[in-house]
Structures are given as structure tokens and as C-alpha cells.
Image 1 (cartoon, rainbow, N blue to C red):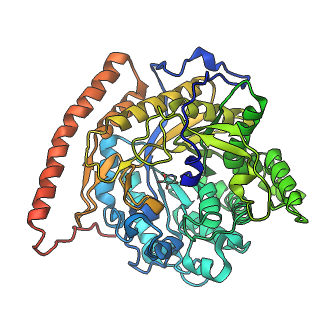
Image 2 (image 1 turned 90 degrees about the vertical axis):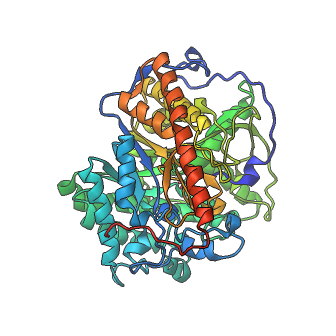
Image 3 (image 1 turned 60 degrees about the vertical axis):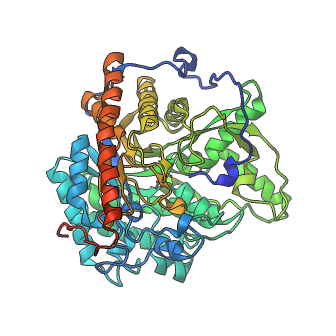
Length: 553
Ligand code: NOJ
């Protein structure tokens, strides 16, 4: 998520002719508006995703320890409506139900994360391994495989064990590298016979910036100017260590892949004839995606980050840069630790150059970049305040990855759009439009030569959306959070995505238009079902509540 402060800068209408500076493909050939009918390479993997804290619930069940998100969400005023993930979708109890939804969609893969404190309640392996937690993930993995759905498993989707935060300061402390490595090693040992796609970290940008710099996310620290850089430094080292552990100890027998999932929003220069704007837009991407990808692919931070943060640190009278440095040994250890790159992409910004003063009090990650973010008010923004639908940015970002990092194997690990909580409308035509256009831009990128192997719609279910609580719904399936059973209802986008999957792309205009029409027709009956269920639950509001029938874990 992009912080509101950054987006709020200015909502300005800009009429800009968008052509690119990249050399190896011609943007102008495919005008923004043009739709490309065609199919994806054979074997392309279609999926959907979610994460432990956002969907599982069962926050204090079966021996699970507390995570920083359990603690943060219980503090008043941190989350919209003071929502918590205590129950969320009750995914912990609904493995079979949810796998049926995936089958309905004909998914090839499902992306989920393992809750570290569910396996290791204190975060530390030598303290205690919670076998009930292991059993839950065994059950989920086995059930997916029985249904021919490949698990793509994230080891860290933000839920650090609280004990590690309290004792050591979490990702501010280098000791996390070894604790995380032990946790990862346990996962390889217990699940690696069946799991072949591992993601070390999900969106470390958010962990670093929102967890340790702005404090909008757990653990809520506001260490301006240093907190994010330090957290990221340790996360990159932890990622590399886990990759090496897999490489030396497990790859031989398990034959899996280890990658990282980075968020990457695209930055387009406001004025493409202005060199300063072009450089500012490049800086925007380098400070976001490049911050993590450049060390992992090339061994060190982007030169532009070293230059800008270094210069500003000197101007502030600091002896060393606020951006930590890697030793030569660390650089070679980190370089090349990525079997595939996960990309989470949602939106785009226009970027212009803007000098920020570098006084001690004003220095922070955002001001270090010397740029301003702008949006075109004509861009659709149906849900989250930061999320504007700008499909063409996706193709540009994917091409950027190809040229900057040597055309790595890419899995799109997140892409999707939200709507507001109050919207009980299952006929989500705007989501259909979003998926259709974004997936089409990904297809164009593959035709450009980008090595994308799979796509993960974000998300399978409506779920806990971090500091926004339940107020923003990203799901293909609607979840009625007011009902204790947390029933799921298909939105129209389920039907549409299912067609894309079965056709492995977009066969022709007539068919794709038919899919849209049919999807919207079927959802009106789901709408009625949902409305009836809501009326009924209101009528029975006084009656004793019945709990869901749970799968055996
Ligand atoms: C990225 C995060 O990884 C995910 O958990 C979240 O739901 C999406 N952004 C949407 O904000």
C-alpha cells in the first residue's frame, strides 16, 4: 500500500503523451487503449492468493503465539473501526470450503503464507515447535495437492512473532536473520517434500517503510530517516541467508525454487521531454522495487539511492550515510539469490522532480527521493484511496524488470482491485474491467519478451486489509463478515476470471464480451442470495448464534 500522505500531494489533471525512453520495445506500437487478443504460453500458471494474518483468524487457537499484528490491531486507533484479524475469514477452519472455491475457479496455484508464530510461538525454534500449527499447514498443503493446485508459500507476510519485536526490536535487529533462517529451515524440513515454490518475504517495502518509518503498520515505529533503511538491510540479508540454506541443504532432494515477492508500482515522468522528470520517475522505481531487487540481482543498492541518501546525510552533518552498506563479502553472498522474482503490482503514478530540504528533522525515506507523485483524476479508483487503475503501467514495469535484472523468471504474486466495505454489490464490473485490462497488459509484456510464468489474482477472498481493517474488499469472493459463519459469495469477477483461465487468455472480442455479459447476469442471483441471507440474519439476530461446522484440522 502507498501511504496516503504521499498520494495526497496533489490530484492534478495532466494531459501527457506517454511514450517511453526504454530501448528494447516500442511502446507506441500498442497504444494504451488497444486490446490484444491472444493466448498465454502453454503451462502458464493461474492463481489467487491470500495471507495468514489477513484470512486465517484463530489468532489465539491451538498454541499459536502472538504476532506483531495481533498486538498492533488490538491497540485502539490503529486500524479503521478498530477491526482486528482475530476471526477474519476463519480460513483456519475452512480449508475444504476454500479449496472448493479455488477448484470452481480452476486455479493452477494458490498463494498463501505461513504464520511464523503459529509454528514457533516465541519465534525461536529452540523454545518450542507447535505441532498443531504444523498440522494445519500440512492439511492445507495436502488438500491443495489432492485437488491439483500448486501451493506457492510465503514465509513472511508481515506477522513477526511479538516476542522477537519486544526482545530485540524486530527487523531493526540483525539477530532476526538467524531466527528467520531457523524458521525457514523448519518449513523446508516439514513441508518441502510437497512445496516447490517458496517466497521468503512478501513486499518488504511495506514492512520497512510502513512498519518502521511511518508507523502505519505493525510494529508501528516511527524511526524517520533510518528505520526503513535498517529494516530493509536486515531483511535483504535474511532473504539471502534463507536462499543459501535452501540451496545448500534442500535443493538437491526437494528440487524447489526460492524467490522473493516485491511490490512495484510504476512511475511515469510527468513531462517526458524533461530530463529531470525522467530521472525522478526512474528514482521513484529504484527507491521502491530497485531498493530490494538491485542488491538481490546485482549485489548492492541502486547507485541513485546511495548518491541521494549519502549526499543528504552529509548535508545533515552525519558522519555516515543513513543507508547502510554491504561489505564486499556480503555483496557477493546476496547477489543472485533469486530463483524467480515475485511481483506485486496494483497502480501507477506520474512523477515530477521536486527538491526537498535536507534538514535533520525533515529527513525521511519520502523526502530523500526528491520527487512528487501525481495522479490523473480520470483514472478509475473504485476502492482504496491509493489504487488507481492504470493498466499500461503494468506492462512498463514488467519490461523494466526484464531490462534491469536480466530477464528473470517472474511470477506475478499480487494484482487486483478493491471496493469499499459498504458496497454489497456482487456485480463488480469495474473489477472485471481491471482484471481484463491488467491481464491484457501482462500478455503484451510476454509478447515483448518478459519471462512471466504465472499470475496471482489478489485476492481469493475479501479479508483484513491491514490498517484499513475490513473497509476495503479485494476478494473475488465476497465474505459476509457480519455473519459468524463468514459465508463466501462469488462476485461477477469469479465468472470472468474463470473464463480467462479456461481459455488461457483472450480468444476474440465476441467471446470476451460474452463472458462479461454472462458474468454480470449470474451475479444478480448471487446478489439476491446475499440480500436474503442478510435479511434472515437480521430477523434471527436475537436467536443464539451457531458456529460454523469446521474442518478437522
Ligand atoms: C500488498 C500486500 O502484500 C497485501 O497483503 C495487501 O492486501 C495488498 N497490498 C493490497 O493492499
